[in-house]
Amino acid sequence: MTHAQPQEQAQEQAHRARTHEYDEEALAINARPVRFDWSGVPLEYIPGEPYATHFWNVMHLALPEGERAMADVFAQALVLIDDPRLREEVVGFVGQEATHASSHEGFRKYLIANGVEIGPVMARIEFAVEKIFGDHGITDGRASRAWLSERLGIYAAAEHFTAVVGEWLLDNTAFDDVGVDPTMLDLLRWHGAEELEHRNVAFDAFQYVDGGYFRRARTALIASTGLAALWFSTAAYLYRNDATIARRRPWPVAFALAARRHMIPGISFLFEQIYLYLRPGFHPSSMGDIDKAVRYLAISPAARAAEQ
Image (cartoon, rainbow, N blue to C red; front, top):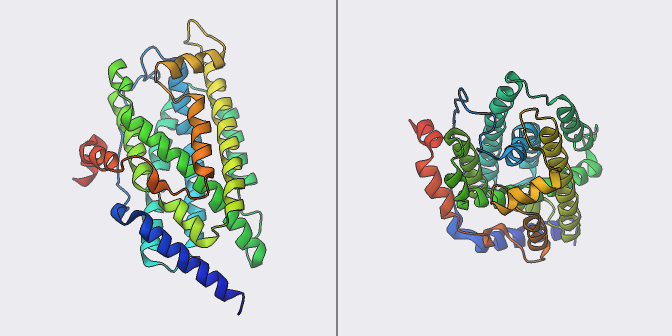
Protein backbone atom coordinates (compact mmCIF):
# COMPACT_ATOMS: atom_id res chain seq x y z
CA MET A 1 0.00 0.00 0.00
CA THR A 2 1.40 3.40 -0.95
CA HIS A 3 1.62 6.42 1.35
CA ALA A 4 -1.08 8.16 -0.73
CA GLN A 5 -3.65 5.40 -0.15
CA PRO A 6 -3.96 5.80 3.65
CA GLN A 7 -4.17 9.56 3.17
CA GLU A 8 -6.96 9.17 0.58
CA GLN A 9 -8.79 6.75 2.88
CA ALA A 10 -8.50 9.21 5.78
CA GLN A 11 -9.90 12.00 3.63
CA GLU A 12 -12.81 9.82 2.51
CA GLN A 13 -13.57 8.89 6.13
CA ALA A 14 -13.43 12.58 7.11
CA HIS A 15 -15.80 13.41 4.26
CA ARG A 16 -18.31 10.75 5.34
CA ALA A 17 -18.07 11.91 8.94
CA ARG A 18 -18.65 15.58 8.13
CA THR A 19 -21.53 14.73 5.79
CA HIS A 20 -23.15 12.74 8.59
CA GLU A 21 -22.43 15.44 11.18
CA TYR A 22 -24.38 18.31 9.71
CA ASP A 23 -26.39 17.55 6.61
CA GLU A 24 -29.16 19.68 8.10
CA GLU A 25 -26.78 22.70 8.17
CA ALA A 26 -26.08 22.71 4.44
CA LEU A 27 -26.24 26.49 4.12
CA ALA A 28 -24.99 28.45 1.13
CA ILE A 29 -22.12 30.59 2.45
CA ASN A 30 -22.08 33.89 0.58
CA ALA A 31 -20.48 37.26 1.29
CA ARG A 32 -22.98 40.08 1.82
CA PRO A 33 -21.78 43.51 0.59
CA VAL A 34 -22.79 45.36 3.75
CA ARG A 35 -22.05 49.02 4.47
CA PHE A 36 -22.08 50.91 7.77
CA ASP A 37 -22.38 54.66 8.23
CA TRP A 38 -20.36 55.64 11.30
CA SER A 39 -21.14 59.37 11.25
CA GLY A 40 -22.60 60.37 14.60
CA VAL A 41 -21.81 57.06 16.34
CA PRO A 42 -20.49 57.88 19.85
CA LEU A 43 -17.02 56.64 20.75
CA GLU A 44 -18.56 55.14 23.90
CA TYR A 45 -21.18 53.23 21.97
CA ILE A 46 -22.11 51.13 25.02
CA PRO A 47 -23.50 53.89 27.26
CA GLY A 48 -21.79 54.11 30.66
CA GLU A 49 -19.48 51.18 29.83
CA PRO A 50 -16.04 52.48 28.80
CA TYR A 51 -14.19 49.23 29.45
CA ALA A 52 -16.76 47.11 27.60
CA THR A 53 -16.62 49.55 24.68
CA HIS A 54 -12.85 49.17 24.47
CA PHE A 55 -13.13 45.40 24.84
CA TRP A 56 -15.22 45.28 21.67
CA ASN A 57 -12.98 47.90 20.02
CA VAL A 58 -10.31 45.20 19.89
CA MET A 59 -12.38 43.61 17.11
CA HIS A 60 -11.99 46.74 14.99
CA LEU A 61 -8.22 46.76 15.48
CA ALA A 62 -7.29 43.08 15.31
CA LEU A 63 -9.79 41.56 12.91
CA PRO A 64 -9.01 43.38 9.65
CA GLU A 65 -5.41 42.08 9.57
CA GLY A 66 -6.27 38.74 11.16
CA GLU A 67 -9.23 37.91 8.95
CA ARG A 68 -7.44 38.90 5.74
CA ALA A 69 -4.52 36.65 6.72
CA MET A 70 -6.91 33.82 7.55
CA ALA A 71 -8.75 34.24 4.26
CA ASP A 72 -5.41 34.00 2.44
CA VAL A 73 -4.46 30.78 4.24
CA PHE A 74 -7.78 29.09 3.46
CA ALA A 75 -7.57 30.25 -0.15
CA GLN A 76 -4.17 28.51 -0.33
CA ALA A 77 -5.77 25.34 1.05
CA LEU A 78 -8.31 25.17 -1.78
CA VAL A 79 -5.83 23.32 -4.04
CA LEU A 80 -5.80 20.50 -1.48
CA ILE A 81 -9.60 20.19 -1.16
CA ASP A 82 -11.32 17.97 -3.73
CA ASP A 83 -14.70 17.75 -2.01
CA PRO A 84 -17.03 20.02 -4.08
CA ARG A 85 -19.27 20.98 -1.19
CA LEU A 86 -16.40 21.89 1.11
CA ARG A 87 -14.65 23.83 -1.66
CA GLU A 88 -17.79 25.89 -2.22
CA GLU A 89 -18.09 26.56 1.50
CA VAL A 90 -14.43 27.62 1.79
CA VAL A 91 -14.84 30.04 -1.13
CA GLY A 92 -17.88 31.59 0.56
CA PHE A 93 -16.07 31.65 3.90
CA VAL A 94 -13.11 33.50 2.38
CA GLY A 95 -15.48 36.08 0.91
CA GLN A 96 -17.28 36.61 4.21
CA GLU A 97 -14.03 37.03 6.13
CA ALA A 98 -12.80 39.65 3.67
CA THR A 99 -16.06 41.58 4.15
CA HIS A 100 -15.71 41.35 7.95
CA ALA A 101 -12.22 42.80 7.68
CA SER A 102 -13.30 45.79 5.61
CA SER A 103 -16.34 46.47 7.82
CA HIS A 104 -14.31 46.60 11.04
CA GLU A 105 -11.59 48.60 9.31
CA GLY A 106 -14.19 51.28 8.59
CA PHE A 107 -14.75 51.82 12.30
CA ARG A 108 -11.01 51.67 12.97
CA LYS A 109 -10.60 54.63 10.63
CA TYR A 110 -13.42 56.37 12.50
CA LEU A 111 -11.54 55.87 15.78
CA ILE A 112 -8.35 57.33 14.29
CA ALA A 113 -10.26 60.29 12.85
CA ASN A 114 -11.62 60.98 16.32
CA GLY A 115 -8.20 61.04 17.96
CA VAL A 116 -7.98 57.53 19.42
CA GLU A 117 -4.28 56.52 19.54
CA ILE A 118 -3.89 52.97 18.25
CA GLY A 119 -0.34 53.01 16.82
CA PRO A 120 1.40 50.83 19.46
CA VAL A 121 -1.27 48.14 19.49
CA MET A 122 -1.46 48.06 15.68
CA ALA A 123 2.31 47.47 15.57
CA ARG A 124 1.89 44.40 17.80
CA ILE A 125 -1.04 43.09 15.77
CA GLU A 126 0.76 43.52 12.46
CA PHE A 127 3.88 41.83 13.87
CA ALA A 128 1.83 38.82 15.01
CA VAL A 129 0.00 38.45 11.70
CA GLU A 130 2.92 39.09 9.34
CA LYS A 131 5.99 37.87 11.24
CA ILE A 132 4.65 35.07 13.42
CA PHE A 133 1.89 33.61 11.23
CA GLY A 134 3.16 34.66 7.81
CA ASP A 135 4.54 32.37 5.10
CA HIS A 136 8.16 32.71 6.32
CA GLY A 137 9.31 32.07 2.75
CA ILE A 138 8.19 28.41 2.98
CA THR A 139 6.60 27.90 -0.42
CA ASP A 140 6.92 24.24 -1.39
CA GLY A 141 7.54 20.72 -0.16
CA ARG A 142 6.57 18.97 3.07
CA ALA A 143 7.53 21.95 5.22
CA SER A 144 5.07 24.15 3.32
CA ARG A 145 2.26 21.60 3.76
CA ALA A 146 3.03 21.25 7.48
CA TRP A 147 3.10 25.03 8.05
CA LEU A 148 -0.15 25.42 6.11
CA SER A 149 -1.75 22.72 8.27
CA GLU A 150 -0.46 24.42 11.40
CA ARG A 151 -2.00 27.76 10.41
CA LEU A 152 -5.25 26.07 9.37
CA GLY A 153 -5.41 24.52 12.85
CA ILE A 154 -4.76 27.85 14.57
CA TYR A 155 -7.38 29.66 12.51
CA ALA A 156 -9.92 26.83 12.87
CA ALA A 157 -9.62 27.15 16.66
CA ALA A 158 -9.89 30.94 16.43
CA GLU A 159 -13.03 30.53 14.32
CA HIS A 160 -14.57 28.38 17.02
CA PHE A 161 -14.18 31.25 19.47
CA THR A 162 -15.58 33.80 17.02
CA ALA A 163 -18.58 31.55 16.38
CA VAL A 164 -19.44 31.09 20.05
CA VAL A 165 -18.90 34.81 20.69
CA GLY A 166 -21.18 35.44 17.72
CA GLU A 167 -23.89 33.34 19.34
CA TRP A 168 -23.33 35.20 22.62
CA LEU A 169 -23.86 38.51 20.81
CA LEU A 170 -27.11 37.29 19.26
CA ASP A 171 -28.41 36.06 22.62
CA ASN A 172 -27.31 39.02 24.74
CA THR A 173 -30.41 41.11 25.50
CA ALA A 174 -28.43 43.27 27.97
CA PHE A 175 -27.15 45.24 24.96
CA ASP A 176 -30.72 46.15 24.06
CA ASP A 177 -31.48 47.09 27.68
CA VAL A 178 -28.60 49.61 27.95
CA GLY A 179 -29.15 51.08 24.50
CA VAL A 180 -26.02 50.17 22.54
CA ASP A 181 -25.72 52.37 19.46
CA PRO A 182 -27.88 50.66 16.80
CA THR A 183 -25.31 50.85 14.00
CA MET A 184 -22.61 49.27 16.15
CA LEU A 185 -25.05 46.70 17.51
CA ASP A 186 -25.95 45.69 13.98
CA LEU A 187 -22.27 45.36 13.03
CA LEU A 188 -21.59 43.14 16.04
CA ARG A 189 -24.65 40.96 15.53
CA TRP A 190 -24.35 40.76 11.73
CA HIS A 191 -20.74 39.68 12.13
CA GLY A 192 -21.70 37.25 14.89
CA ALA A 193 -24.48 35.77 12.76
CA GLU A 194 -22.13 35.14 9.83
CA GLU A 195 -19.57 33.56 12.17
CA LEU A 196 -22.29 31.23 13.41
CA GLU A 197 -23.46 30.61 9.84
CA HIS A 198 -20.03 29.41 8.67
CA ARG A 199 -19.02 27.82 11.98
CA ASN A 200 -18.24 24.42 10.41
CA VAL A 201 -16.12 25.55 7.49
CA ALA A 202 -12.70 26.29 8.99
CA PHE A 203 -12.83 23.19 11.18
CA ASP A 204 -13.85 20.96 8.26
CA ALA A 205 -11.14 22.40 6.02
CA PHE A 206 -8.51 21.70 8.66
CA GLN A 207 -9.86 18.18 9.17
CA TYR A 208 -9.79 17.55 5.43
CA VAL A 209 -6.25 18.81 4.89
CA ASP A 210 -4.72 17.43 8.10
CA GLY A 211 -7.18 16.16 10.69
CA GLY A 212 -4.63 15.12 13.30
CA TYR A 213 -5.91 15.41 16.85
CA PHE A 214 -2.52 16.30 18.29
CA ARG A 215 -2.16 19.22 15.89
CA ARG A 216 -5.75 20.29 16.57
CA ALA A 217 -5.17 20.29 20.34
CA ARG A 218 -1.81 22.05 20.12
CA THR A 219 -3.01 24.74 17.75
CA ALA A 220 -6.14 25.29 19.86
CA LEU A 221 -3.97 26.05 22.89
CA ILE A 222 -1.78 28.36 20.81
CA ALA A 223 -4.81 30.18 19.40
CA SER A 224 -6.65 30.54 22.71
CA THR A 225 -3.55 31.73 24.59
CA GLY A 226 -2.59 34.17 21.84
CA LEU A 227 -6.10 35.55 21.43
CA ALA A 228 -6.55 36.03 25.16
CA ALA A 229 -3.19 37.79 25.55
CA LEU A 230 -3.84 40.03 22.55
CA TRP A 231 -7.41 40.84 23.56
CA PHE A 232 -6.77 41.64 27.21
CA SER A 233 -3.60 43.65 26.56
CA THR A 234 -5.19 45.68 23.76
CA ALA A 235 -8.38 46.40 25.71
CA ALA A 236 -6.29 47.41 28.75
CA TYR A 237 -4.20 49.78 26.60
CA LEU A 238 -7.26 51.46 25.11
CA TYR A 239 -8.96 51.72 28.52
CA ARG A 240 -5.83 53.10 30.20
CA ASN A 241 -5.31 55.76 27.54
CA ASP A 242 -8.91 56.97 27.31
CA ALA A 243 -8.79 60.50 28.74
CA THR A 244 -12.59 60.77 28.83
CA ILE A 245 -13.01 58.24 31.66
CA ALA A 246 -13.83 60.04 34.90
CA ARG A 247 -13.47 57.07 37.26
CA ARG A 248 -10.90 54.56 36.07
CA ARG A 249 -10.71 51.25 37.91
CA PRO A 250 -7.89 48.73 37.44
CA TRP A 251 -8.71 46.90 34.23
CA PRO A 252 -9.22 43.45 35.85
CA VAL A 253 -11.85 45.02 38.11
CA ALA A 254 -13.43 46.79 35.14
CA PHE A 255 -13.44 43.50 33.23
CA ALA A 256 -15.14 41.63 36.07
CA LEU A 257 -17.79 44.32 36.49
CA ALA A 258 -18.52 44.47 32.76
CA ALA A 259 -18.82 40.68 32.61
CA ARG A 260 -21.19 40.69 35.59
CA ARG A 261 -23.41 43.18 33.76
CA HIS A 262 -23.32 40.95 30.63
CA MET A 263 -21.54 43.57 28.54
CA ILE A 264 -18.76 41.09 27.67
CA PRO A 265 -18.30 37.31 28.08
CA GLY A 266 -16.76 36.24 31.40
CA ILE A 267 -13.43 34.48 31.80
CA SER A 268 -15.15 31.13 32.43
CA PHE A 269 -16.50 31.38 28.88
CA LEU A 270 -12.97 31.04 27.49
CA PHE A 271 -12.06 27.95 29.53
CA GLU A 272 -15.39 26.27 28.81
CA GLN A 273 -14.90 26.67 25.08
CA ILE A 274 -11.31 25.39 25.20
CA TYR A 275 -12.56 22.28 27.00
CA LEU A 276 -15.32 21.67 24.44
CA TYR A 277 -13.01 22.18 21.45
CA LEU A 278 -10.41 19.76 22.85
CA ARG A 279 -12.87 16.89 23.18
CA PRO A 280 -11.85 14.22 20.63
CA GLY A 281 -15.33 13.92 19.11
CA PHE A 282 -15.95 17.65 18.85
CA HIS A 283 -17.58 19.14 15.76
CA PRO A 284 -18.89 22.72 15.48
CA SER A 285 -22.31 21.46 14.43
CA SER A 286 -22.80 20.36 18.06
CA MET A 287 -22.95 24.00 19.12
CA GLY A 288 -26.16 26.01 19.58
CA ASP A 289 -29.05 26.67 17.23
CA ILE A 290 -27.76 27.88 13.86
CA ASP A 291 -31.23 29.22 13.05
CA LYS A 292 -30.35 32.18 15.30
CA ALA A 293 -27.96 33.31 12.58
CA VAL A 294 -30.52 32.84 9.81
CA ARG A 295 -33.17 34.76 11.75
CA TYR A 296 -30.89 37.71 12.53
CA LEU A 297 -29.54 37.98 8.99
CA ALA A 298 -33.14 38.21 7.79
CA ILE A 299 -33.71 41.35 9.90
CA SER A 300 -30.24 42.94 10.05
CA PRO A 301 -30.47 46.48 8.62
CA ALA A 302 -27.06 46.16 6.96
CA ALA A 303 -27.78 42.71 5.50
CA ARG A 304 -31.20 43.79 4.22
CA ALA A 305 -29.72 46.89 2.60
CA ALA A 306 -27.06 44.72 0.94
CA GLU A 307 -29.76 42.55 -0.63
CA GLN A 308 -31.32 45.61 -2.23
